Length: 327
Image 1 (cartoon, rainbow, N blue to C red):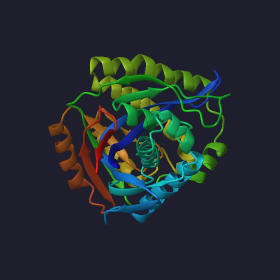
Image 2 (image 1 turned 90 degrees about the horizontal axis):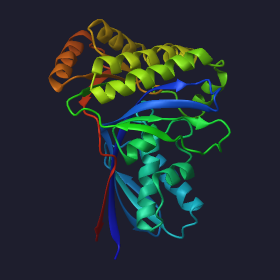
Image 3 (image 1 turned 180 degrees about the vertical axis):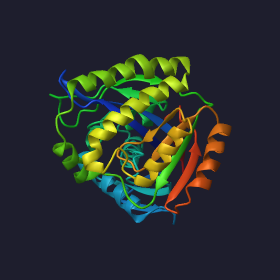
Image 4 (image 1 turned 45 degrees about the horizontal axis):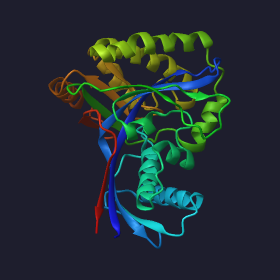
């Protein structure tokens, strides 16, 4: 009998790369966190023709991206039929939250389940050309939590997905504040590729320094649930990687407004904060919801720019939710 399928997955924070030099044969390597919100929710069923619809709140560009990915995968898998998709929730595009990867993985998993292809998330990512620099979004789809990948082998095929090195259950009490700037999109697509090509060679000594902070500070801090130590490690990554990308994104942070908020949070004693990926979205992590809410109220009073918006959320420690039902 025909089946319906619903896939729900969520955005992620990309907190920084730690080896942009690549002298040991692997490049990039990254640390990130799966978020409970914002989320992508897609309902689907098999169909003779491809049809993509969405709720009024879902932008046409999101529908177009889902359609393009579905066409790409259907062609690569040489399928004779297609799928009907309905998107009811979406992750903001080009905000540094990994929306493109989550759409690709969700659509790929839908096709795999409906046509009994048994594709792994990694298979889908490679078919869709996702995860070429970071494996965080792919691991977030599978497992959730705080994630660390080992970068891509310099000699590997271009579509090879970075291996996941470590995964930690993010403390349930720790609460995340997201800071959005509606006036500008983050760098993406061809602009991102050009940006990487224009940058100078990253310092080998600095890459070693950042790897040490991840291995000897961020990772033990997650085991010991030490937000201050974890935040110190993230600040080192944010500072050096942000400054390295500054010629491309216009400063340590892509958004001047978000940068001002993050500076204020630093002055206020926030333990962990930064920009996700190319931004412009910023984040801060607090020990509990009450502390996060108190900081948010202070920020709303101080920063009245209408382009800024805020969201308090938690981490997602479960990965994507895939539900099949017979219709």
